[in-house]
Length: 379
Image: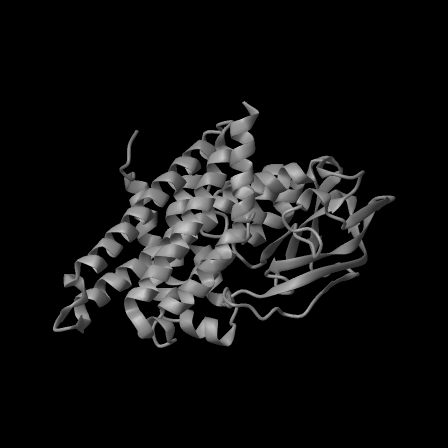
């Protein structure tokens, strides 16, 4: 058991931190205010290898580990959780093609995804099926060498702006075993998009419904065999949960550091806030929760890298704990700022808005508890 980073890990952690502070942090508030999808900055991130972090290197990926990815996403999210989270989703979709696609599929799509010449979206959630994803209704009927796709996906990050959509759809009977995965290009006839959603946070990435009306998709675009789409979706989410947990760590770390500095500067009753023992206790709890969340998340990442059969449970535990702790730390940081924490001149409120959704997406934290409980009680 070694808690020290390797020299290589320290190097790309430093690279990610430098990029985040120089290319993301100065613009994050403006991206949030103007609802800007920062395409140029995303492509700069891709040039550093951040668009295919655990994609194989023959198609332009960085071929790093899930633990490496956790380090990178924590650094990126310290500058802008919203933009870091989109990079996470793009990575998840790219990995699904890399892991489950044929060599021809990998060569067709991944070189442009790893450079972010093309952007990717992951399409699982539907208007009537969020946590109950195994009963999704979007259907793909076989017609010769194509599928005819009908249905609607909801809350899709990158929807309308992404070029490639990894879509979970029903090709067979009811339940998870009837689901397959199709890669749908943006220019597919019959593919359209809903309105751009107005959201509490995550404003630097667009969110739209993705709508299929008799969209003809080549059968050659199916990832793997028919009926394994739900397995593919869940495998993608194991890593996605770690990434979004790491994004919560990064946002929480920034807010903790900001609150610490503020406590040393701000005076009340003739002394700095840092001199009040009650507030010292609060800060101590925040840093302890952050460290505990990071350790659990890194352990889960190492188990996923190792192919451990209990990795899914640990990924769910880490996602639940890191996103709950991350939001709580940011909320406490806002409280320590008093009224200043609530106004947009200070960055804390943006991090609060961005981190709140981490407790909902990639599987709600209630579903994470369900995964953990079922695994425990199955033995």
